[in-house]
Length: 260
Image (cartoon, rainbow, N blue to C red; front, side, top):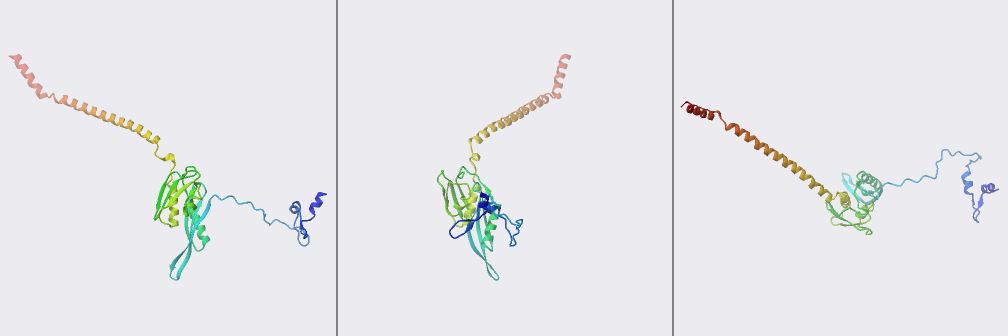
């Protein structure tokens, strides 16, 4: 009788602690003091489904405490610098203030998601070298060979870590202001252009072919106008060289000779 044995509680240790099998626990129903079965209509299932993976990952780069002087004294607030990315080719940076650290971070995250950019990549690195300046911050970024890793520090590493770039060489040459450095990195990624859009021989080869055709058309039009201009004056000259006044004296002279 295996079913009757499963319904009984089993001793699992020497202290006398009892434990039911999984099948018995699954079929057991809760009862109240009087022994009546309790309804489970209003209870929620404790085995909740795992939340779907997030599309974007966020990182808090810096949190500062800032003050504002008012009539009653100083008003303390918090400023948060947050970066948001999808570990591919989308990245955003946001800065916001709030009365609480949590409020500042949430507000900065919303701003970062609202102003995200999409940049071009060459495999697992950037397309070309770029140097960007934002106020006093000056950031230089160079593409690197596979296996190099991210050679960067501080803000640049935090931002590039949220993208799909795995190999990069960078250097901060100017100010150490983290907000300006973050915007300089963002601007450098925005300026990336793929190799297809660089100046290539295919683009140069198309342009010279189109120019001779246009020049030939223009030359033909000019030559046609010149020929028309030459023909027009010749006709006018023939008509003007035969005036009626010059023919009359010749006829009179011939008539006088015949009369003599």
